[in-house]
Image 1 (tube, rainbow, N blue to C red):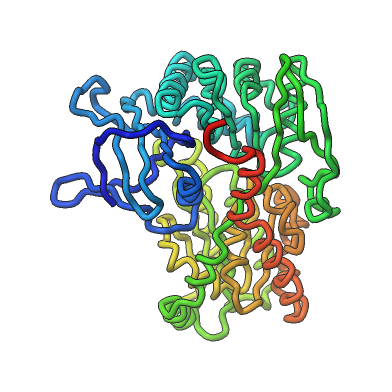
Image 2 (image 1 turned 120 degrees about the vertical axis):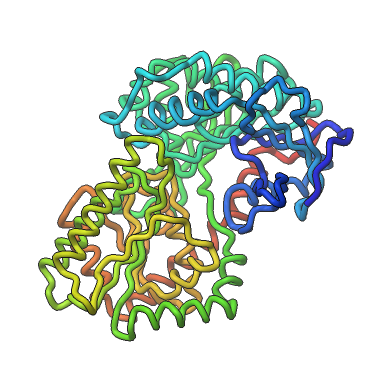
Length: 502
């Protein structure tokens, strides 16, 4: 890919997201921009929209020692496999990044969004800095957007951008997509800035969420704070209303009214790039990786795979405790299982995540010390990221994928597992508090807050006959294909009403 600071046209589509749309690497002492290694993920998905418009732009932040440095290139032009587009980079100091992202977003917003009120920390929040950073994002988007352009803002750390943008450019069509859960009013309204946040979101033309429950929660929050009327509701597709999942809803608001404006509320689950994952699953290097995994495990050892970040919302400690209980109750499984628990640190500088990592390490060590032997290690704990091509080999080798977050907006790891199972076998054990459970109801659904539910789900998966495994996996693969990232993109296009000048 190439980058330059050439003159540029105004953009019909502006994507506002905190991450830059490429990777920065050091080569021979110089910073080089590279396309993301894997085409699977949210950044490549968003970039795929660029081909639908004449010119597009991306707004992100980049850490800078001196934001006033005249040598800092604020806007660059990128040419890569997705086409030509502008990247407007906001220079933020390390202190601004810490305040806006690591403190306000992660210590105040994150626990409330995931309904962990006891972990909410209001004291260190510097709200003026959060406003300042969001204003800078809005200014950059306004500068890039053509008349009547679509500006698509992403996620909770940019909550105030739509409101500021509406003040600056009332001609724009503004859409916001929320990638995390959205809680009920009694939880969200813990935030002292609740009204300012909701007023900003109501400045949008479209507000998007993964599933109907999160959309309904948002509308309830808005109605608790402001005069908001539900103008239209729709019956949720039967595909997303399976009994037995905590997050399913049967009706959802689709159009609301506020201050003489109509706002469309969209529920569309983000999916995965099924074609890319299947291609990787068929690759000779994946078959080679599977052979290496089997050789290391031994022919008679069954692999259980858990993949997530080190975060109290992901349920890693609860999962390991369940595994420990199952091994205690089922001595017949000793020597026959390996749990590969991948828990990658999200932020090593935050005490809450250090606490979770320490807990995971202690329990894993206790399990291996109690049940392991020279010949058998019950748990392999991995704390570093696994390249996606290698991860697919583990997906294909794992008899069970055990994905049990306590709360999650969607969780795409479970969908990656299903898309990788081109053999039609394998069992997915999935928390009913992951947004994906609404889509993947053929999984073995479990409640991670219940010891009995967690233990029974794992033993049920271990004891499941092949015919049932294959029936479930067929249904799961169909759901993942129907709700792929392409389907999500199409839903967003429909909500936008097309792109380009209005």
